[in-house]
Image (cartoon, rainbow, N blue to C red):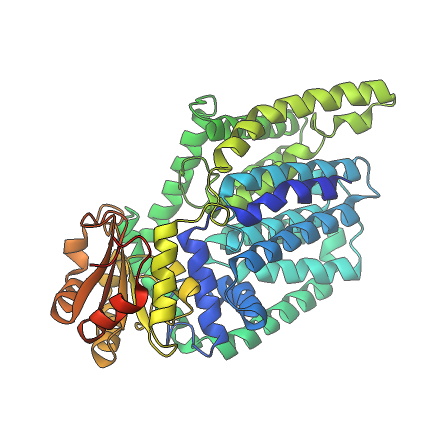
Length: 512
């Protein structure tokens, strides 16, 4: 019943606005389904795991945002069902699973539907792994061989998702190794991990140039990307770890600084976690409290405040924290009362407390509907690119506008679906992009209104692109007219007149 209510509540996420990171995952997955190779043909500094769901989806249905959202909704429902099945026979286990389902559905409304991102999958994985271990949540699911296989596979998936999740993976694995029941199933855990790793390797061998993985994922992320994150280049890993700890310290110290609804809800969650850990520590379970605090720190590896949104890169933290708070909290308390009136009263109090956050959030996010209220100007331009350029034509989009490829079904003319300052300062990425442009220039180029990224001015890193535009292209679209604050479209000079005639924008103002 809770699962059905949560799914109905979360279904609205399928229609909320898109985000560039989600579009990038969808666009790259689509390209991989068309035979492109990750790292060789398209740039990414992420592990192949990011693109497995999108590639499988695109192979079946094409680059459909709506299908991607419903795929992830199904994944969330499957994770919640698995949690319920795992805990249903334990004391308060079913109640905790129900509370987790309701809370996780509510939290996901803050993310504007960014469900294709790998952090969401890993958030579910962490929750299932933590629940399967038993004692960290005061549950005791039996360590059967089948559950050993599942836990081993989950640990492998966590390790292969992102380098930033390696500390969390190590903590979960260490907890399993410390418990005799799970340690006795070591062979089954190993078999599950090997099976998941073999499937990952098989998919990656088909869709990625693994000889370039270390260069893109390790060297780039250690030597180039940290400079734009403000990390010390001589000790990037230590600097990153120190930044994570400092960010958590500030967050816990400011848990009562409720300047906005999202801060209110996150502050309440952090206070509840501190109370939970303090209670266990004072009860003599210091190791358990310390393990959970360490895991929760490891699950939020970067600070990323976003207005009206839970930072999606930290979604594993929110999922795990929600599971922890659901255990024995007021949201699960109605099941602990024997009389229906008492259950109803406590349930009403819990619902009222939750509504303080959820109702204003629903009102705010209801205005962010990509599908029910699309940007007509942008839709018209992308429709023109799709209809006025041959299917074989390739386009480019800067700085990060991967939606252009998804919506026009035109492949990128350069080996990237996004091009940002950190790529422009990395010689391999910059040189490959310019070589591809000069060898086969794009038929059209889409520019976002603001090309400044993280304080880096477009003039300082986009001069190569700008020079090629001025030399061989004509601007055919600016919106608003003569004031390109939102986007521009440039078309190859020889195609300019034909493109304008074909587009014939209905408002008569877009073409010039």
